[in-house]
Length: 429
Image (cartoon, rainbow, N blue to C red):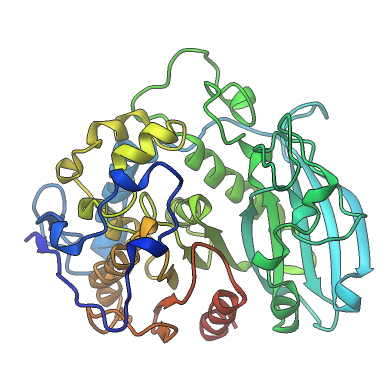
């Protein structure tokens, strides 16, 4: 039976259009009025394509889960890249007393080809010095290069393509000294390390440059065997970034300081969409965390609230598969919605975070995405969100899934990390 979407009332949620985090010139395209959200019906998670009810975890694992993954491959993200790569690692640097002596910091180059001139990823790895044995860790991509995570001049400056940014002095798509530490406020390193966790991050442009280049650069240069236009269900950049996260997990399987069986995949914004897809396609990730991921991430597409499928495909045509464009201004025709993406994390714990001023990402849609994933968690005997009423601001809910909506805008804050760590303490210890 199809599931009627709830018209949730939001206690304490002040959704003010004047506060929204919307790119210039786009506000007139977006709907921020709940009364204008179209009536919609969500596809039933617990019904197979042949119409059979899914009543046991075994039925979900044995059949329905694979159907849902394929739906996202066909209609949203496209297939992950395929082809053999030869992973080789080389230690670039090792600092035993980083972060004022709290952490062991390593830079590890991961080569994807036998030729050193081929595509490679730079892993930046932090682990606590005062913890014996292997530690659980967070793995996530960053936006401006590893040197942006910490303001230490010894960190290697990314040599990959970087999006131009006047504020950071980035011109000609090359990182500058001004980028050092520019993302430090998004990575609460001291809190993470003091809590006994490791952190591994990679510049997402190492895997695939974030522009529409016809898929000739990054990993596509070695895995894509043709210059022809993409097939309808061939993966875009989000699938490429998710693939890269899995290759990083491959490397961590042999790491002496990180327990690869307790790695949470994390992402913010477009990289939050990526973390959800990585968690869906690689069940080795022990936890999935999506922060402000919005359209194409945790938010329900059929709400057409804030950023829409049509807008995101026009501005970022390389993120999703070509088939996804069929649903531009046509979300109701989607044979899926993103509660199904979140459900693919089950029975592993998943956390979704929103920000009240981030209307562009549709906080209510993100919450409903997690809420409507609940039947799969219940199927496993786990506790989903207790109701379809959003919590008050800065009042997290943590069961076998987690959610909060905090004060502020589209960003990753220390408050977010405080909640992610509390949730990890419940499930990764």
